[in-house]
Image 1 (cartoon, rainbow, N blue to C red):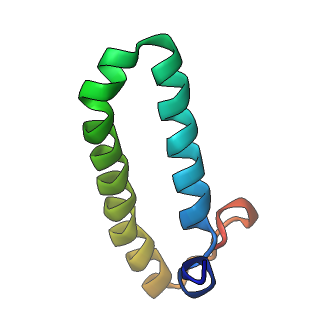
Image 2 (spheres, rainbow, N blue to C red):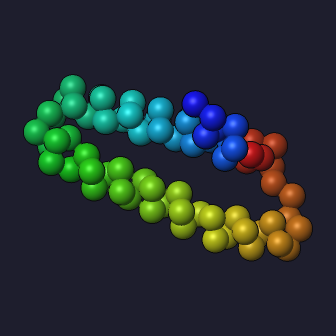
Amino acid sequence: MAIPFYLGGYFAIEKCLGSSILLVWQMYNRQKAKDFGFAMASALICGDSLWGIPASILALAGVKALFCLKL
C-alpha cells in the first residue's frame, strides 16, 4: 500500500491499465491471453523503463514537462 507514496501514483495507474487490458483480452480470446499475457506485461515494463532514459535527459536539460506529463 505504501509503494505509490514512495514512487508515485503512476505505477498504480499503469498496473490498473495493464490488468484491464488483460481482462478484456481474456474475454475475447482466453487461450492467447494465457499464452502471451506474460510477454505483453514484459513489453509494457520494458517500454516504461526505456522512457526513463529520455525523461532523465530532458530533466537534466531543464525542459519543463507539459501539465499532462507531470508526475
